[in-house]
Image 1 (cartoon, helix red, strand yellow):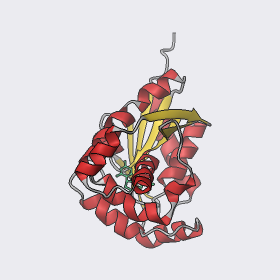
Image 2 (image 1 turned 90 degrees about the horizontal axis):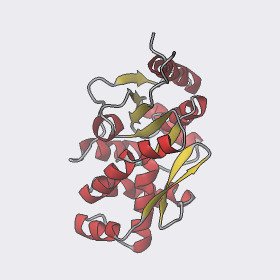
Image 3 (image 1 turned 45 degrees about the vertical axis):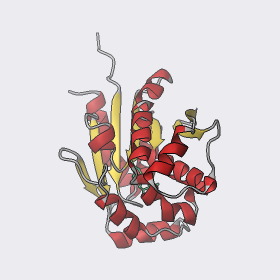
Length: 223
Ligand code: DC
């Protein structure tokens, strides 16, 4: 008798506009796996701190986080972070959040709260009957799930990434965010040893998805 396929965790990391979200969404729909966008978690917390007028300082943010009830809503194949029962909307992609998110994401209490929360998403995926989890971010393969069945690191030339953001109509200093995200003390953006590094500068989204999908398929049904 065939043994059931293992539950697979796929970690997709990369800088801003590296193609992580489009790739992760397409993969999640194909297998189907639960999709988790951890950038949206940092954005949601940043939007909430800005709303409350809290500066990006450890003590103040730590106190505010202790009062925040974080939950999860599974909707259309994705797990969405709820804050006090509400999934934040498009405000998490505003220029104000783009400019502030790397500063909040560098703080230890923010990372500690989201580490536990994000690891818990594997159980959310299992309990909803998904065959796996695709989680995208900056430290998924290095810190959140270092033992993930597949770890992919996407990168692309800065000019190409800036063009992608401009096509999305977004105002976002991606080079500055990458600089802050890569140089911070806790869980910096890095390609962890053993991850599969893909340069997407000259690849279409379909090409990237096809490459990663082949890696996923090989892990779901090993020869
Ligand atoms: O993926 P994104 O551009 O939406 O992420 C927004 C910010 O969140 C990013 O500049 C840094 C932070 N982030 C992080 O520190 N760790 C993650 N795993 C994901 C995002």
